[in-house]
Structure formats: C-alpha cells, structure tokens
Length: 245
Image (cartoon, rainbow, N blue to C red):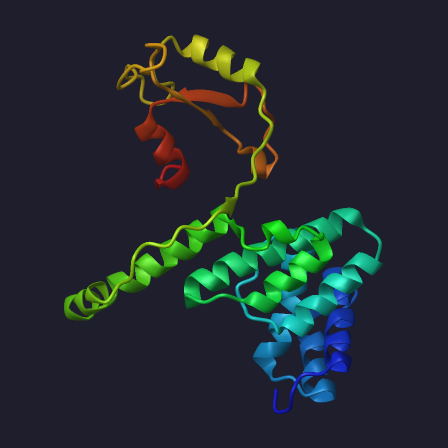
C-alpha cells in the first residue's frame, strides 16, 4: 500500500474476505475492490483475503499481515459467534507465529501479546507449534542447500549456541485397543514389506513395529483396525514422506 494501513482498510478487507470465503464474491473482484477503493497493492489485497480462509480453518498462513490486521480479524471472528472458528483462528495465528519466527529468526512480540490477550493464557505466550516449526526448518534447510559451500561455512562459523524452545503438539486421543489388535495381527512382521520387525523393544522384548493409519486421522480417517497397519520404521517413513505414499 502507498499509505499506512488503517482500520477502515482492514475492515473492508475482512468483509470482502468473508464474501469470497462464502462464495458470494469472486477473488479477483474482491482484490480489484481493495486496490481501487482502499489503496492496497495487488499482492497485499490477495494476502488479506486468502489469509482469512487459512485463519478461519486453523491453517498456517505464510504471508505477513500487520499486527493490527490480525487483531481485527481475531476480534471480529470472535464477534461472529462461532467458537470453532475462533479456536481455529487462534490456532492459525499461533502457527503463523511459529513459521514466521523460524523463517526470519526473530520474535514477533506483538502477535504473541495479541494471542495471549484473546486466550488469556499468558504463561503459554512463548510456546511454538511443533508441526509448523518443523515445516519452517525444512524450508531453511532447502535454502541452505542452495548456498555455496563457502557461504554456508561462513554462516556456520558465526553460528550461536542452540536455543531451546517449548512447543505445542496437537495429538489425537487414539484407541489403545486398535493398536494392540493391529500389532497382534501382524505377528511381528511389517504389513507392507512383509519383513520381520528390525529389532525388539528394550522395555518388553516385543517386535518393534509402528501402527500407521492408512487414511490419516488428520484427513478424516477412522481410528479403526481396518484403517490401520503395522509397519517397520522404514516403511512407515516411506508412507509419510516417500514417493509411494
């Protein structure tokens, strides 16, 4: 934008973003409105509109919005009355904070204070989202691989001591009977490659296999014996990260 963003600008972006999300308005029309009527540049207009979808659904948004803009979005999502949407919005901003801080190697204190204000849990304001931290770290690794060896070595020479952070991990409350049944069904052999478990668990000497959901719980899969299989660690990683997943 050519001028400093105002609350009126943000309000307009929020209302248009809602219309786009509800399929009441096309994205290009909303963007054109923000550019011509509110003074946004094309990129910023898209960021404010597209980020609304991420925020309302609890997903990470990677483009930087102003702290004022995020505060306004959270405030009005809360006023709109859906507890699910508001909880998703808080979750989304937390993920954004984790991602942005990792990529830029900085602390976004204002955003943390905003989340703390709405959550009223100040003791958690320095927590990061583990899954998004991992995504951001992988992106940094890719960028490092593109540097020259000399450049990377110079950075390594000036690197500071490892910093410890505390993270939030979102987990599903899984059914232990499903895990037990699947492991017993496998009889110590991977249900993908057919090979015997690579080693025994130290704690109870049982074959080490990992129970994997064919359709992941995060994607709507059921926590059932039918939707699970016992895998060796190598096949389990391939299922998640390999070409055959």
